[in-house]
Length: 113
Image 1: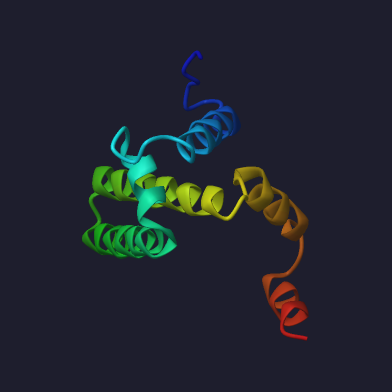
Image 2: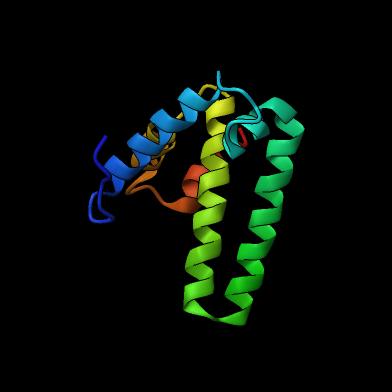
C-alpha cells in the first residue's frame, strides 16, 4: 500500500481507516491500536480525552508545531474511537458536508428539537 501524501487528506484518512479496521482483529500485543481495542472502549475514550486536553494546552501555548503534533494525536485517537463504533472518517465528513452552508446557530437549534 503506497503512502498517501498530505496533499490528499481524504486518501490519508481512508488508508488510516483501513489499517485501523485491520487492527481490530489483531493480537493486542502486536500493535498499539490492537492493544487499545483489546482494552476496550473506556481505554480508547480515555486516550481521546487525554489527547483533546493536550491539544488545548498546545493551542494555549501557541507553538504551531506542538499544536499540529497534538492535533494529529487527537485526530488519530478519534479515528480509533470511530472505528471501534463501526464508523469511519467518511461518516463524519458526510455530516460536515450536510452542515456546510447552514448557519451554525440554525443547525444547533434544529438538533435540540
